[in-house]
Image (cartoon, rainbow, N blue to C red; front, side):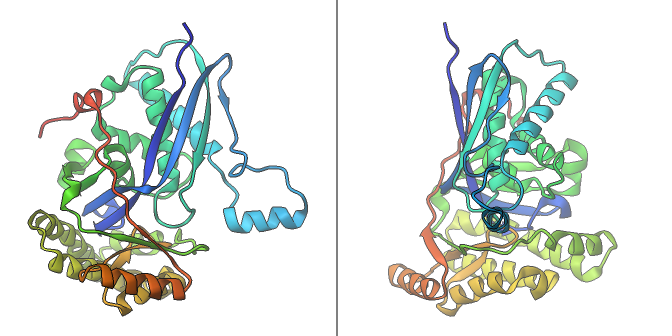
Length: 354
């Protein structure tokens, strides 16, 4: 009997409140969104093959100008390296844990529509989807705890020199809406944070705003991170306040106090702007926020820049004002489509009870 083809999907994510990443021992509320996703397909095959994507891994060009234009818009790297790194980290983990893997090879391929450099976790979505394919191909899902899967996905990206934290991967592994506590105590004792899924029905209508040609925010983290490591009082206190916004946000969502949610979202961005500075955030990213706020919407980045999440507290007429203002400024607006939790019965058996 021929083995079945496995196809797994992972979704883009939005950081709603809290720290930009877990490296500051903070807290975060994030959600997966169905607007954009990455899909990885695993087909049993004689040899192990990583199949390049016909667009994202293009190596044939009509001219040198075509090549340069492509590099300027899409960068140097596609998803092949992500799939290869995922296989390496998966195999290493299973070897270290004495998890026996069956014989057999496969061909991995992927597709994605997550816009690049928009802070929507496009790279980790590919890795997450690939990791799920491997779990199911080797039938070891029940042997790899849900809580550590985000770390393994992060390790695959670290393998490639990608600077990132855990929260994106947690949102994609769990799906839905997740509150995360990355306190130093949890990180030291458990090796990961405490992750608490929340009911997506607690969320009000949210809107995604993004630019077609976003700026790269890769330089943002290192500057502030070093100041934090050096004990800079302003950065330390500001990061603590940002973490508390997520803690307060959890209460606000549970009570559906959306007026207060507006204040928390705006404060979240204001603190980020004070810490990182306008040069690091980029004028296009700042304009995105300011356009949304000009019509009274609450607005903050979804991640490090390139896209923003907005909330219109006054309803449909308010949303229309937001759309008109953003369209006039050249930004795309889309209603956030929510993703329910994605964990199945086999996954839940591995979740630790705290």
